[in-house]
Length: 359
Figure 1 (cartoon, rainbow, N blue to C red):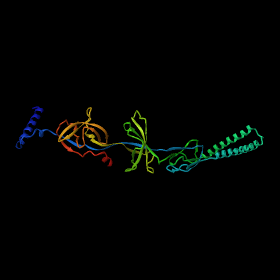
Figure 2 (figure 1 turned 30 degrees about the vertical axis):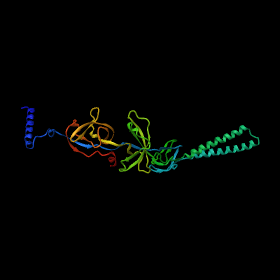
Figure 3 (figure 1 turned 60 degrees about the horizontal axis):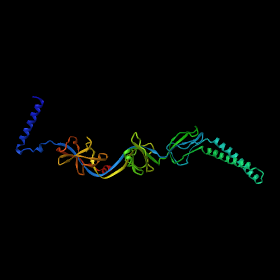
């Protein structure tokens, strides 16, 4: 006997035994004899759908600068170290200024002589004992020397390296005794009180973003703490290669332990849809042109085409096809056909977005 013949015989025998065993209680109905497909279902609910953009970014100081030497000379003393907080105008280091000091003395002496000459020319002019040309030349020489003296005094003042704004010394490039060239970097300074985060946002979300929108930053270094931020700038141009555009967030809180260079996670809510019909994404079958789900009603599976809106997490907005309270198959639906009888295993109802966000 072939394998197929054996299977047919076993099936026939099983059927006869089943029918004989049920003879005492009457005939078995056709519906009860139909095989059922086991499926797990969830209930479609209605609630607010909050679209949230999540990304990562590196914090940057909004104000940072390289503090350079505005004159050359030997470093005499360094007054600050990396990590020190400094105020605007605070003295950071001092260079040897002997050459600049002698230059100031020389130019000051020449300025005094020319000032005396100019005063004498004024007296001679009053007695008509000097030409107008000579008088004009004396005034010009004095003005030129006054400017030269001011430049020498500025050079003398530049021997002191001062902080251009309040902040934290993030790096020290110099040490006492070294010779510093003109415009060489001496320190790196950053203002920790004004931090910002730059992230790349997909072009699909750009239209919903605007300056002033609230965001939250989370740093792994400070678990359980969220830091407030807001959208400061949204780029007007999209990168054609990546399909994203840079968005800058300002950290609103001051005095936080956050530091430039830290990696943070960004959570930005950019849209809220009130009273949305929330469908489990797991229920959607995307085969073919039109997505569909199976609505389970009184043990029968009904195929329903659905139009979908924005999604968030494990849920998606259903624009049509299902209603709140419908039960949809979320497990086993790929084995279903329209009007199939099913055996239902219930799972927890789909939570609203607000409930999920509150956890």
